[in-house]
Length: 254
Image (cartoon, rainbow, N blue to C red; front, side, top):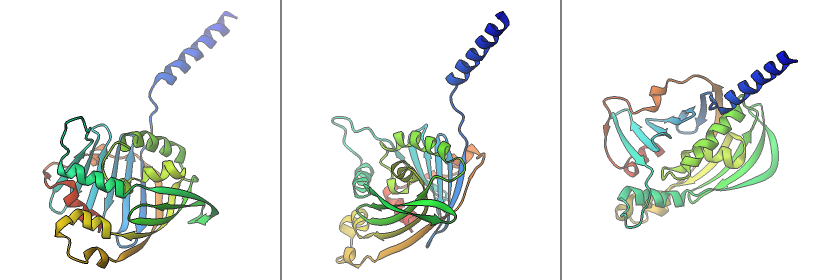
């Protein structure tokens, strides 16, 4: 009986020990094929995120509460900090522009009753709309490690919700709002309002009306757990900080 009590006490102690330890999450990597941009690569760690699209790279450092937009061609980067608007604090020009963009990109997500198989996954269809986009998105929960992936995303979104960076690039918004990972999306984008905001008085007359609407399709090509080199979530040595993030965004949107 004494031996059983000791064994039980040991198991209780081990349970309490491991319950108190922080959960060790895996890293994730996935690829999406996007019309006009080719293969877009995503990297997710418990405290960082990276996206490679065309000639630009976006890095989110959740420990530092900062986003970095990198241009490897010119070895330059811009930084966007989480700015607390305190009483009497005058917002910077970039912060004001990003705030306007955030309002323009505010998403409305509507579930539908449609289900189907897309790329071999059982999916559900959602509709998403903002000031410049309208999308049909098919999402799934059938990816290996999805539950763990979602837990990481939800933790990061608590920080991201305060971040003035461009929320339309954050897949976490889709995962948390739709409760599924995007497998396919068909999107129509109207860049007129955003271009007018970025150019302001420099916008040519009739420029907004002349901006064509762009249709695109994005398809998930790969999703996997893998160990990532944490150096990839840092600004490389030799890069120089330049420009406001609003000035660099047109290159990222191509």
